[in-house]
Amino acid sequence: MIIANDVSDLFYVPKGQYLLNHSMGARAKVADENLVHGIGLWEQQGANAWPKWFDLLSEFRSALALMLGAHSDNICPQVGVTAGFSKILHSLKLKSTNTSIAMLRQDFPSMGFAARKAMQGCWNIDWVEEPSLDAWEAALKRRPTVALITHILYGNGQLQDVSKIITLCKLNDVFSIVDVAQSAGILPISLKYWDADAVVGSCVKWLCGGPGAGFLWINPNVTSYLEPSDVGWFSHENPFEFDIEHFEYAQHARRFMGGTPNVWPYYFALAGIKTLDKIGVNICLLHNKQWVNRCIKEAYDRGIRPISPRDAEERGGTLCLNVSNDPESVIKQLAEQAVYVDYRPGYGIRLSPHVYTAIPDSWEWLDLLK
Image 1 (tube, rainbow, N blue to C red):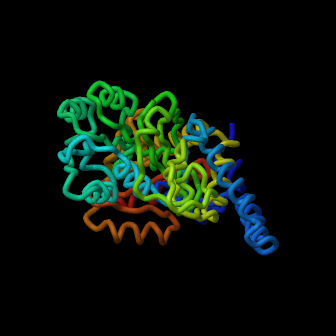
Image 2 (tube, one colour):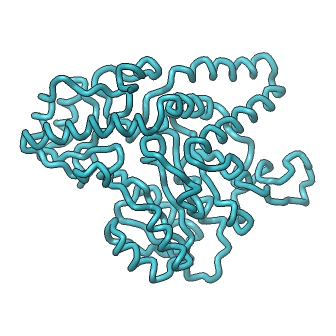
Image 3 (cartoon, one colour):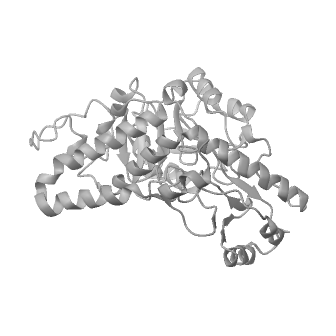
């Protein structure tokens, strides 16, 4: 079995116990050579480098599609999760001016900001009060226009049953958008099986792809009904037509591309995805569960209460632990011991071990949380 010591040489892992993979994954080493090659194309070929750079974007989409059980035509690069979410909202053909988005109060705040600003004056937020199927069923029976379904909650790492919520969306004619920012790369995902209307995500966390490499996926059954307002020449079916008076949406998800893309983040993102694909997402998850389960046991032995679900089948890769009255002081003291975590109000200390994170010989650092 491939475990932390076997794969640590494949990544630049910060020294100490790096437990911030829910925020940013370690950089894959193979990205260095790839990026040098990409910069070399610019130096040697100038504008003639673009065909190779477009090949890079295609390779990124193909690698991501393979990992997520999708087709590359239905994936479009984005600068981030919120940007993709906002573009999808603006692309919907609204049937009335009284529209709403069902989402959890525990969703990442950036998504709430985007929801409030989307077509300002037309959208309302229909809050789902808790991440349970009963709460979702009650909210979806009110027939909101859109449901934002976060696969893994950023705060406490709780896993939602995306497949069942999507089924409820279909029964109530609700457009479903799934956020996989905290799950892609640590949990097996099949977009074909889910059959959501759209999915948004990022490579910065568990996919070890760095900032700036987000993505969206559009169900091919709904693509033709979506008309993005934030378009550019690469949203056009024929970008090189060069007729300023004629625009035709690209047939597939590329209609969400916009203008000239930034290629550099995708050198890092492709390297992360390919490296994790060689290891296997299931191996990443298995190692994560072993690490977290051991940490939970050590925490309970010290009287520290987990805030995340204790059952591994109910959470993603992040473990949240209750902390003393001065979390900032605790984080500082942990950093002095080369243990790197973060804190979110209401959710405690967040720890996220990846496949390259070794299981510690000593857990004495947990005493600081008491």
